[in-house]
Amino acid sequence: MGMPFELNTMIVTKGREKRVEENLFQLEKEGYRLYPIDIPIDVRKTIESDTSGTAVIKKVEWQNSSTSITYQLISLNSTN
Image 1 (spheres, rainbow, N blue to C red):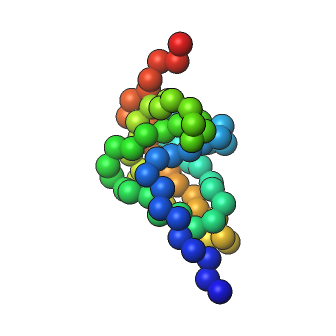
Image 2: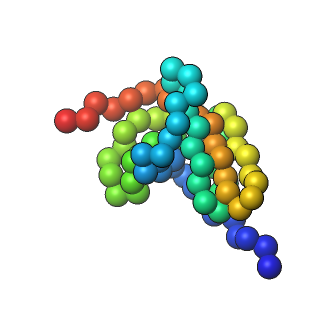
Image 3: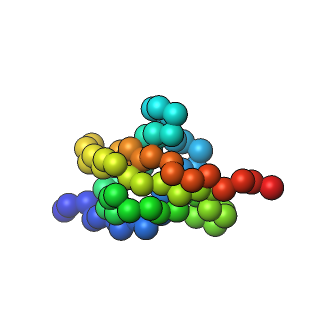
């Protein structure tokens, strides 16, 4: 039985993102997930939290039942 794909319309980091360059980040998620590439989407720490910024995903890789995304943060919301 194959693992189902999950469509994600936002990036939920849960604080696990790793900074690659100044505004470039990498995040690994369990399971195989589809993400829109090259269009701005919301970045949130949790699904319920407010948007922490906007990012454009540059790369998605699937391996070993996990999805790795590389994304560029294009705007950051100030947290009060």
